[in-house]
Image 1 (tube, rainbow, N blue to C red):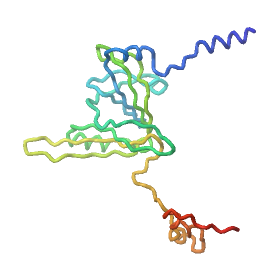
Image 2: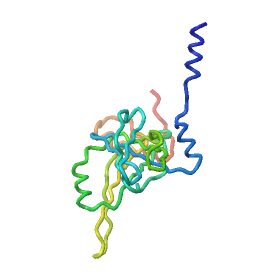
Image 3: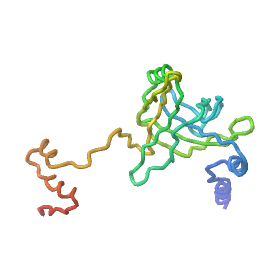
Image 4: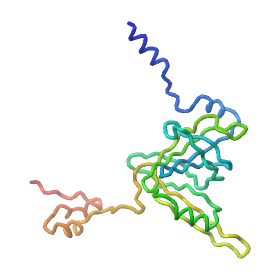
Length: 214
């Protein structure tokens, strides 16, 4: 039964822990938390909620390691929800306080973001603000589009710009809602003799139309 002993050894050595034990141990006490954002553009964007640039990387994604740029305080971090029953809310991640010239340069040189993979992860930091383990991905999404906003300032204030990235937790990256009703007029514009959508207006009002029995 040597093969059974080998199988038992393999099962015994397997761990289903998603969060590394050292991170759990650190989070059980007072700790510093690092939040990391990765956007899979070309080249990829690596940014974290902090000041200094630090070497880090998601397991199996940043296999060779990389440097995550300190983005300061990340704004507009909403409650992150996963895709449920085909429905997902659009969420935005933003950075404010950028001078307009720099913001315009970023937008001009930014690679396409639509449809790109987004990962949000976290890990604990030591006393030197270095990761105690690789960031653990806690949320995955799909990028939709970038927006920029600027508030009205007084004469004594400097103008600043905020850049936000809209994304969803699924692959629904529409910037506008889809049509809620395909009416008979729509169908006949394409196929004048087709009666398939003749009952959709009554169906939209909650009336169950009587469909033909062929």
